Length: 223
Ligand SMILES: O=C(CO)[C@H](O)[C@H](O)COP(=O)(O)O
Image (cartoon, rainbow, N blue to C red; front, side, top):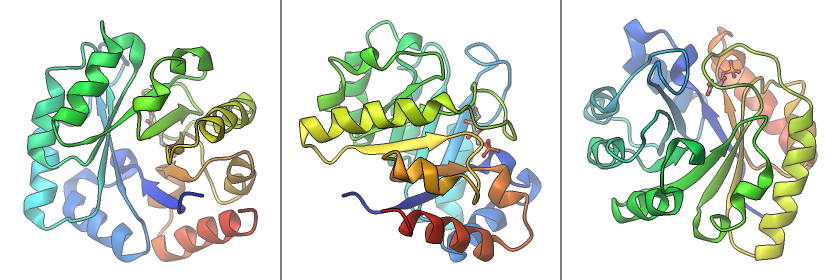
C-alpha cells in the first residue's frame, strides 16, 4: 500500500504571498505541492507557468512539486517544467496527440508521469497507458476552478481504477482532485485513493495544521 499523501492545491493560496503560503502548508504537515497549470484553452481559466515553479525552488521549497497540466497541446511544457523543478507531471490524454509519447517524454525529462481523467472520461483510456505511469489523477470536479463540489460518481471510478492498479501489481499512486474535504476524504480513501489534492479545504482555513491533521486522521481510520 502506498503512503498517504496530502497535496494542497496552490490554486487556492494567496498568490501575493505564495512562497510563505507553501512554506506554511509544508510546515503544517502537507507532503506535496499541487501546482495547477491552466491555459485558457483546454480549460476556461489562466494560472501559472514554469517561472513560478522555478521561483518556489529558488525560495527553498524541497518537497515534491506535482504539476497538473490543464493545457493543450502538452509536450512543449514538459521539459520546461522539468527544468523548473517539477517532480511529477500529469496531463489529460485527450489534450495530447500521442499520449504514450507524452508519458515517455515526462519520464525522459526526469519526472514521474501521470495521466488525468476528467469526471466524464471513461477508465478505458488507461488500457495501454497504466503500466507506464507512476500515478493516475482522477478529477472529482470538472477542471478549471477551485471550490467546486465533489462529484459522487468519482467513488465508483476510484474503485475501478484501484482494481486495475492492484491487478497490475505496480506501485502506481491513485490521486483524487476536487472538492476533497475532511468530511469526505475517509470515503475517498476507502474507495482506494492514497493521494489527495485539496485547495479550498486547506487554504480556506486559518489553521493549516489542524485541517491537514484531520484529513490524515480520517484517511488513517480507513486504510
Ligand atoms: O485542479 C483543480 C481545478 O481544476 C484544483 O486542484 C481543484 O479543484 C482543487 O480545488 P478544491 O479542493 O478547492 O476543489
